[in-house]
Image 1: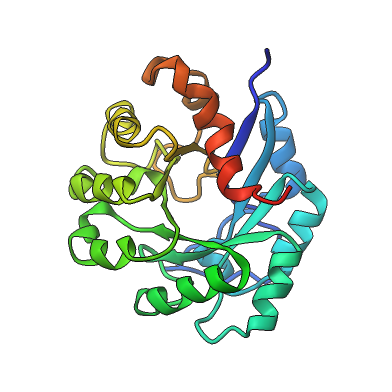
Image 2 (image 1 turned 180 degrees about the horizontal axis):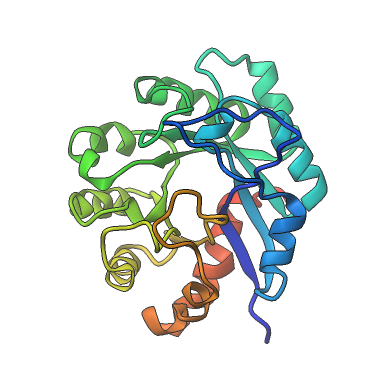
Amino acid sequence: MPRRVFDAHLHIIDPRFPLQENDGYLPPPFTVDDYRNRVGALGVAGGAVVSGSFQGFDQSYLVAALAALGPTYVGVTQIPADTTDAEIERLDRIGVRAVRFNVRRGGSADIGDADRLARRVHEIAGWHAEFYIDSSGLATLGATLERLPAISIDHLGLSADGFPELLALVESGAYVKATGFGRIDLDPADAMNRILDVNPQALMFGTDLPSTRAPRPFTDTDLSSLGEFIDPIHVPNVLWHNAAELYLRDR
């Protein structure tokens, strides 16, 4: 049976819509057509379009991207802490399913707003909250995140420092994205297996395309070698079912 992949972490960079420099960096274009061409042979049948630091609070690019990609794609957006209930409901209708807190690079609501905002979007629209954070920061923030109704952590937590705190979040119900293998400072195979040992439903694969600022961009081998990194019995869940359960709850 051909594999089916839900790409739990991708970026669309469309120069028709507002972009802002982040630490002097402005990414090159990576449009919906570019993305489709890149993953055309990988079995990708859905995914989560994630707002980056360089997109700030702009929603126009995300509305256009989700309309072009179709109903098996959802949005992970950045919104100000004072976003109205009506705007959250509007974004939910066009396919947004999570709010992102970019602790590492900025461009999102402040981490100090995470408790209130994450609870609001979950209550209003059933969204979870996603965190781009180095695991080393979980010693101080882990307790706050553990209390939130539903969360996921990007890129395996990025580093080995703080990984036990990441596993504690997994034990409490957090999802973790197996993404960005070229930007992490830990062994992805070891990290994935330790997460699966705690909760086999927690791990979600993603390409992280177009791998902005990563020392090594995504390669097809990151996907094809997954069955060598983890027990093949887990592969269908990591590639599709775990993410579909989180993101495609009503589709």
